[in-house]
Image 1 (cartoon, rainbow, N blue to C red):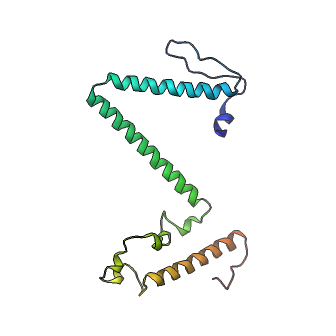
Image 2 (cartoon, rainbow, N blue to C red):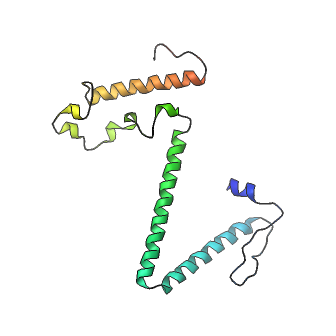
Image 3 (cartoon, one colour):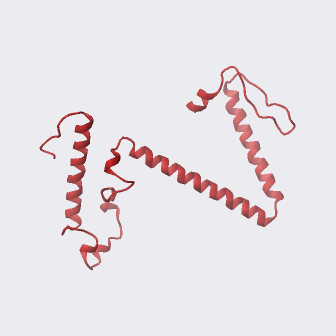
Length: 161
């Protein structure tokens, strides 16, 4: 990507020594690099598969489990990055990860407050689901207006606030 291109020196071709000790073939930095990377990836994958075949079943299972855990950890990191990108630009005072305003009532399939019991176990201040939806949309509009007014250095719209 763009970061890799910015870090690579234009006049040098960096290559790791192959297993026989020789440097990889240099190039002009054109399309050969992408093909070379694909080829190196395929060779690395083949080497990993060959190595797995040499292991006994218990070692192979342990190695595969370790790889699966590594991939899960990478997925968690990616999810955190995406969440961070989604929150970029939002006022950090207005959220601490997730708030009650992030809950999409229309997407909840199993609504325990509809099965009976005390609605006050789920909603405060005498609100019901419809009341909460109205209240939350009003609060989000107010917060949005206050944020925009602050960023634009203007007084908030009194019809919203």
